[in-house]
Image 1 (cartoon, rainbow, N blue to C red):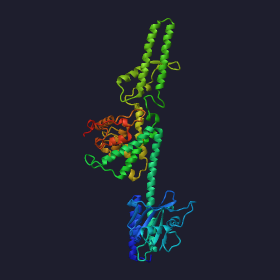
Image 2: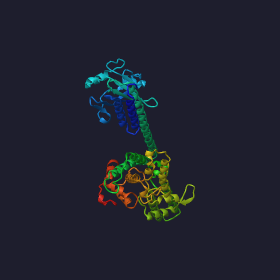
Image 3: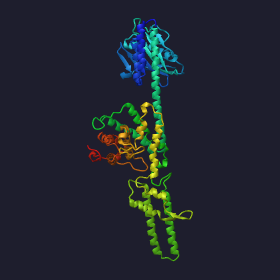
Image 4: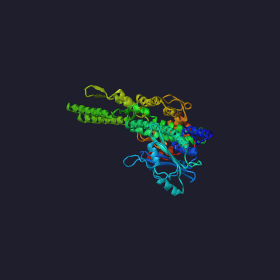
Length: 534
């Protein structure tokens, strides 16, 4: 380092230290690479430089960024201008390392190459560089080429500087050592970024792995897990853009956006433990199969027995016409009961008390089972299922379904989330909470919930209302879904401020046009939506 005075050396060391600190400040890869090249130029006062990156197969070096002060040239990187230069081969067709190019030589051997004048050097092929000079009217003289490798020796890139800016016009040994030090620091920063990116990709892949498992188990839940995060981000972005109203001060950082997206993907991960016959229960009597067929069989037995009784009575000398008339009336009653139970089995928005009472009366009818013993036509468990007032789930089954959120929270809270993802369990775990504290699993009120968690609650309900692929219900029309959601905003179920944004910013319409069946998207009169004032 004899070519620098102590003062110059100290100044350059200070520059290198500052750059090393700056390289670790979490910039994205594109910004980081450009900063590395500009820092190397600044340290050596070079006129130009190129940063190469290996392709995915590590068979070529690609021109990533090229700059030149004399030519006013800036290609790649932040310039947005494409680099129309052929890549530098690292290996030949047989996979043997190529060493004729100085960049390939440095990359393959892992050591720097410092050349005072490329036109006087014979050990490398500089035809490409001469073509560049001829094309742009430039004179390349000195070049310094330094590889960047990670701690395992993997090639990350090659840094090449052109035309040193000192009096001699060559890169000194000190220049080379400083650029090698910079390249080492840059490799550490790049490796850290790559590892962080790979870990984030792995995390999202694991999330998708869980959702694939849920989707294979229940395609209805799988699609819900795909659409809820989409709608969640639509509403969150609309709230973020609000410039008036109670949420005018709400802002979502990029880090919070990432957490909310992950939370949306994971919000129902606990359903991987929910029995499939409960998750997909399409009718009231369904377990592994729909047991309405058993009732049909019992009615066939009742119909047969009624006919046998009438025939035996007629053979015993009874009044034939009267017996046949009575039989016809009995068969008609039995078939009417069977049709009623089939309809009751479907479930719906509300079963009338009279219909529930009729099921209980029918249950008292006796039939003779295969073992010859008489028993009630319906068991207590069958009566419980057939008298479900709303939907197809019993209270016990509803508790099993509701337990998925408890499992979700337990699963997510068991993970060692890094600092920048620590809100994922809170966001995901809040989608069944209510603003009035009557939700679950924790019974939180609005003030105890973050805005992102409240956003997810709105998205979860609206997607469930409009979903057309559930085996236990039809997808509701858009107007009906908004009517229900509006009533929820009035009764303390969802956040009324977010509901206002949901309507005012037309989030519902954007989602409907992209993801709902067009036959569900009817005309909307916003002035008639409960809880919303245009």
